[in-house]
Image 1 (cartoon, rainbow, N blue to C red):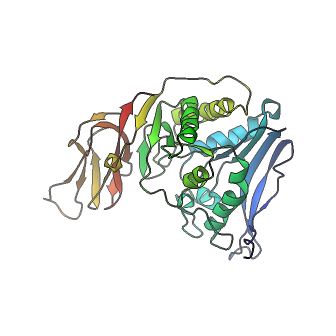
Image 2: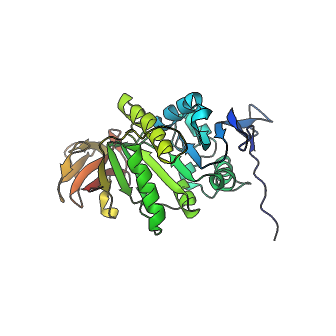
Image 3: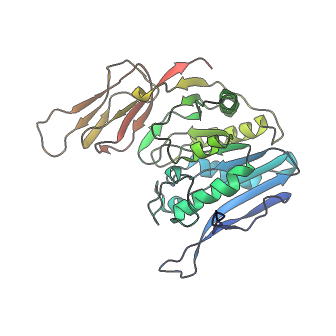
Length: 334
């Protein structure tokens, strides 16, 4: 059997060299305005001897900003003398999408978080995923990927890890979530885990942690503060960065089943009937979708399938059939 095709991405940093390096993951990409052009993905490596390694990413989706804001600053400010091991920072993982301010890549419409394990001979998004799959994830002990709701969702600010078959791996992830100390901590269930960065990391046995910190295609002062404090807490918890974890109060949430999710069945204008963090009862109306094609039509009511707390809502005023309208989570003990 022939060996796998090598990645076309060339790093301009040495991941095994001590000190601080700022560089790029350079991916050749021929296009109309640059025949021998490249996609230049910023990367920072901070290394101080042997020890555990953390891989920190933001911009997996290009319209989510707390992660990039926290990670660009961390890359600028983290002192290697405070590090024991390695911190690899990629503030804008899907860099073309990040530059465009879109969820998916403007080059190939690729959703990075549905493109794993990727292909070295695939689209631009698949090539980036392949490099993470084969070159970066194997280097990491802990993987932290920042998310928020982007343009189409808004969340209560939470840090999360997944329920896993390997309970020892799961517990390590939940311990890191607790160390992050967001206002909410989530035991998360995905409705579509195929091709996810999360899944790729977890299948390698890595400790994987993520967030949903607000949304609406922007950031808020509160959510950026949560991101910046939280990522240092996780690195301290992992023994990679010196210092004491700054713990705050967190409320644990659980997503026990697919009944947490509700979806629009019609196009129209959405009216939210509960605010984020509000308690909701099974059967309660979470949102109404008003027809905009003509007057005189009663709105579609979207009802909660379970009791709990409103953890996420559709963000823009207009909605399409199939869009996620709301997410309900259950408050549990930590």
